[in-house]
Amino acid sequence: MIVRSLGLPLALVDVDQALSGQWRVHEHEVDVVRVQDPPYAAWPRLREAGFHPKPQVIMWRAEVRASEDAYLATLSGKDRYDIRSAYRRAADAELLIGTEPLTPALLDEFLELYEKQIAGMRHGWPVAVRQQADILDRARSYCTVTVRSGASLVGACLNEDLPDRDEMRARFSAVTQGQRSGSLSRVLYWETMRRARERGRHWATLGRDVNLYGHLGNAGLFSFKSRLGCTAVPGQAVEPGSGSHQADRVTGFTALSDPALLLAYAAAESEQAAVTAPLSGRLFSAGEVDLRPFRGAGLADLTLHRVRSASG
Image (cartoon, rainbow, N blue to C red):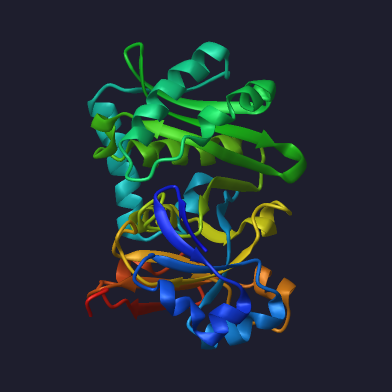
């Protein structure tokens, strides 16, 4: 069955269709062929057939450590420089970085910024707009990092403090178009980690992503979060019930960006072992790609897969 998922053409097939090659009738009509919720017993055969069992959703986690210096020591010199540079640009622009309680008025300000950011994406999905009522219901649990130019909001990150999970979780963030080149997002996430550390939390979780970079987010988002010192883990490892299993095969780039990236389960002796083990990077492109930006993030390995065009 062919469907369009937020602009992405994909074919949903069952395990037998994937293994028998029946999926090839859709090969040039879609960018992805997917088996939804494949049983663990089928994963080895799906891998042999060119499908990649993976978590549907990944979360980005970091242990904030006892001090900022201790955390910075885990990063490369280039990554430390980029963080300092982002703060220098914010200071040069006389931006005010702070924390504000999440009120209906602040949420309205944020959503205006957020919707403009989503509108500029190739396949945007305004999740925060749909969850507005739920966010306000839990407003007291939020710690909102804001960046203002005068009175104007130019960036914000809505962070939920989860003391029972020893975690500060970035739920949604947005910056103005003019601030994206200035790496203001790096400042927002770094401030989130500072707030987590101040409150004695062990973890900072910097968002959750659909596990197919090149669709809702491009592959560069993976590199950005990795360079902040975060590790990508299956959503269900952090929050049971968050997402399911999928097995994907990338077949084209009509709607998917080139390169595309997914994080696959490594081969393991059990389903639980696969969920808790480091993920493996699977990069897809029609041409040559520099792999260096996609290494790290605690990945077990990284492999480039060449995707032939429909005419190839």
